[in-house]
Image 1 (cartoon, rainbow, N blue to C red):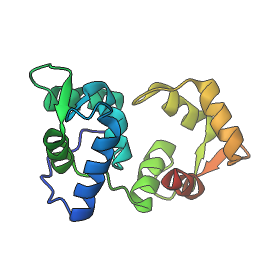
Image 2 (image 1 turned 180 degrees about the vertical axis):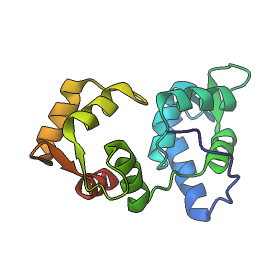
Image 3 (image 1 turned 60 degrees about the vertical axis):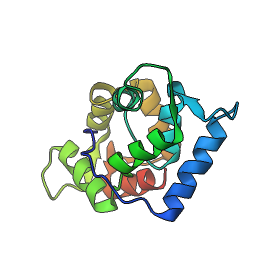
Length: 157
């Protein structure tokens, strides 16, 4: 996942309320600050899906003085700059089609190719974990994973 460009979104009243609620949950001692170590969990709770590397960058941005904490306004600013990750089913199908290497008309990804990508690209996970996931989802048919089926499952997670 590439770092999201600065969007400077206008925050809705609902988003502001959500930010305040999440911040309050993590401000355990009610001093108006939250540890930067909680930032990844907080932004994911806001519907964002940053990689660990992106969270590290967000930590540096939200706490440039390296104090180890940040306030609610800083968190609100971070959410407004980044915006929520919006990925449509079509976007996900397109990305999975690219992985398939079989061109625009691809309807499936070879399971071995998918496992390779998951283990070696982006934030890698072990092939044994990929095997468990594929087994649990029961989406491998004749050594292929249906792209649309996988995309629908991923969109619900």
